[in-house]
Length: 357
Image (cartoon, rainbow, N blue to C red; front, side, top):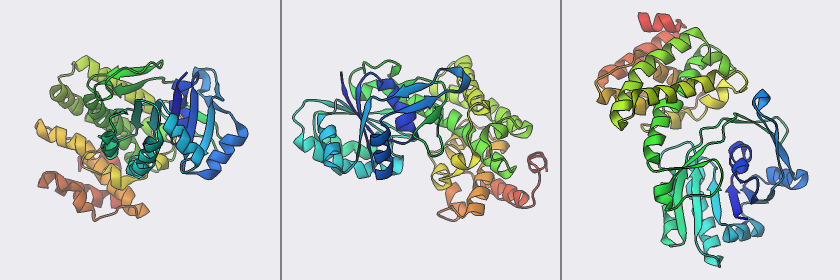
């Protein structure tokens, strides 16, 4: 039996990662002392899958605050450390893990990030100064949602955890963990497909006044935009990564089906927040726009999504810089079009009207 440490006891750690290790000894570490105390007291929680699958009850864990002596000892004894704390928090873990390595009396340890971002392991590169560390990334495809005033989690029925086997240097022995030899390609395809379509639904949905995510994903105007974006974007992705057309079409339709699944009760607001990061040049809107540009294509619908993201940021006062700064890497005429779309959004025109005028 392995010693598994999950840093981050939130919805991804509890509701997704722990299910892969249900027969192992797991230790949750988290900065949230109230959450840790509740895990210690209740000693178990449920993962609900709706009608798709029976409820999974997990009681295989201990839980400590990340800065506790027990937490440090657990890290020092770990065979595998999985991290899901949000990309912006990763570098803050380096001193803690280094401290655990300093008192470690065991051999090699696997450390994997499981974040919704690109090159997330780079934040932890200093750990590799210790030759016992095998550092790699995993990708989270599964949607998990916290239940109000409960440790329980609602989850999409998806047991699939791909990880970078090349960086790790060996395969993991746990069921449903999938060794990928080209994880960076899969991650980029995820950003260009899953994350991009999420942004389409989220920011167009916000503009149209939706609160429930699945309702927005099934809206006819938003579905039209999704289809038109995919028609051009899939062709570019196939060229960039030498992917079979049918394979990419299946990949993108899995994303569409996931977002339109009304059994997954998600909100527009949860997906819309952190818009400053999501307007980054390697993120879900600009990265797809750049690959379209590379292959000589333009998507008015995706430029409209960019405008709607700015619209959201302005309405919620969450943009961290002037909006033109986000689009410096785009062609001037595309930026001009985004500005024009913003003016039309301020006039509360429909999506069809914005795109057709």
